[in-house]
Length: 330
Image (tube, rainbow, N blue to C red; front, side, top):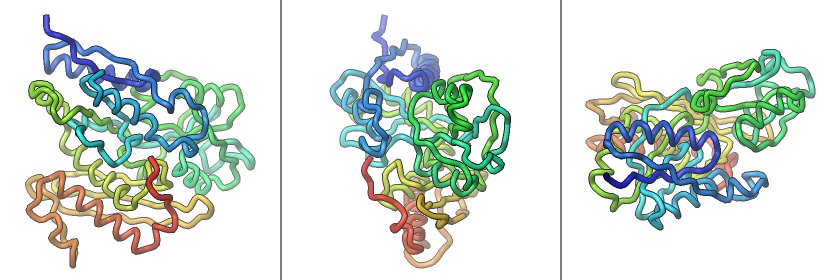
């Protein structure tokens, strides 16, 4: 009997669910059993605010250390929680098809976010969501929270909070059942974090060729190109994954469209762009002027997508985005 493939994962219910989905798909492709290897990160044991302990990257650091140490063969990350810098010796082997990238508002009675009463308590620990809530529901009080999905839902059920903001993909992957009401927030007016709804399958550069080939079959090209653009914007802004910014890209036929906004958490100021680029045989080709005109021409798809994202970041910086985002910490 062949040895199992070891998948390193956090112990949280959501991480286990995400890993389980990928494990099942890989077992069908490889014909080998995939074994989950639970790994505890600092983010799982330290209950301080994420901004105090290094941002969402604290969840990935311990997992990556375990992978490099040979304690597992590959990892599954929530892409929105993953720092843009990939450690030496590792690479993203696949990005499976993206799930729903939207945020949802969870309430007891279905009151829309914009219609919540003055002083209503809305729970979220994300600087981006905090800024968006203050714009959509300025009379509400934002409460900084952490915890798993079930504990957040419970705080609404008990009346401790009037609403929480959650990722639709997380609720879907967990299969969470609740009598609470949900309001889906459209991506046009409420874009979400770079990579939200997507997973990253990561392994070592010297992983066995059969494992790398099997993982590659999990990859979805449209998802990979879209999240590459989104994360390149984050990289170009030199901002951490806790930055008050949003970016969502969509590949439709022969075009790529990205909506991105950088928020000022302390005011209503925001800087946004809505850019569409053409695709030609899987290669992104810019049609602007100057340096952006041919930055991606003739490049491979991933490099072209990254260059497109970086060019969008440059335009945001030219409009003053640097004044609104903290430097990379995660």
